[in-house]
Image (cartoon, rainbow, N blue to C red; front, side):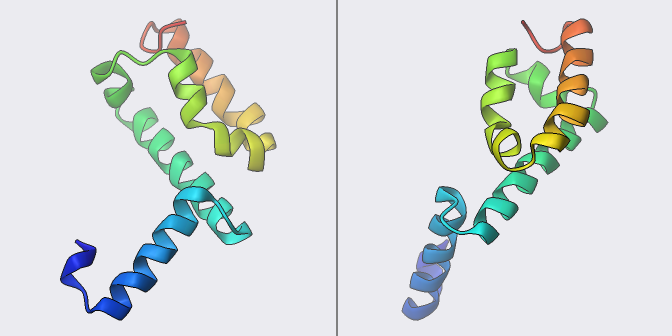
Length: 95
């Protein structure tokens, strides 16, 4: 998709994307952390649709949540982990 842009914009957007993916700045860390959280919330509102589809394990979910664990630990411990446990108890996330 970047190839559809003028060369200067292609370079700038690719640079921003890589900054986001690699969490190179505090802004990228924030954006990546809450991008992961948004996906987590989607699973909660769809009764674990993606977790069911991919037979998610606790290890898989926690790996995906690693930016939240590192950069928003209070959110992780007080909200994410209790919800993960609920879905383990339901049998949707495998232990």
